[in-house]
Length: 290
Image (cartoon, rainbow, N blue to C red; front, side, top):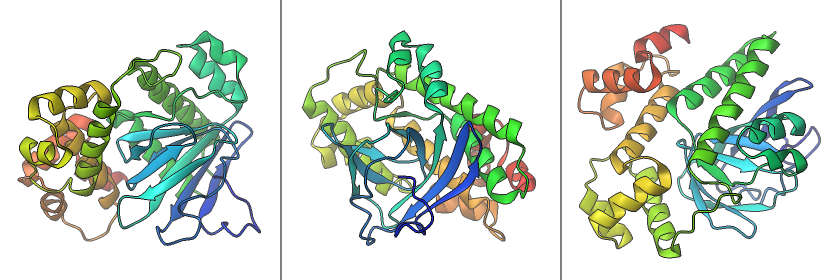
């Protein structure tokens, strides 16, 4: 995924921070770009925070929906492909940490990770909670806008995010080291529901709407979705709305009430309370900070 000056993909991938421990960059690839489906193998071990929604399929593994509720993981040399889900292609921020530091973070949950430093990540994707998402966005904005970023703040924050999201991945059984077999039908139903929610998260969808779309009873859908994603369907949709709001707060001249209603919240107060409860700060305070 990481490309360098002189590469034909250099305009798609930009490194915004680099130190001996951490590298940070952004990837912006329209769906009509010839590199969208296949941008080549990952050149480093990466953990990635999507900003848009896209299907990702690692070679030999099931395809999954990568959206702002998800962290995607790539070992060096990983072959993978994309499929279009939204109209804005693939947009994400990626973080590369030295293999030794990654293995040490994973070893807190799986001691054997210390023996596979060249391919440390045992999972393709996992959940991202509100704290991890907000912290990585704060770090990225810092390195993207400051002429002399605070290296200690950046490195410590990235290592902390790495520890948090990998802990969530292990806790939710994403690792092949601790498999939780699930019927393929259930996997397909949940990914189909995530696809629908990712495309229509601003709409007032019902459980019946989603169940009908994926061909599943509402009771079974609600149960297996929570088991696989750690979120109820409502909470999952709400997280997508809130993470979209976090991006829109950067836009000058946008009233908070307009952002709230555009994203499907019923009122300014509903939006503000949901945002504060998830991120621990109000939207207006985030905007003032930015």
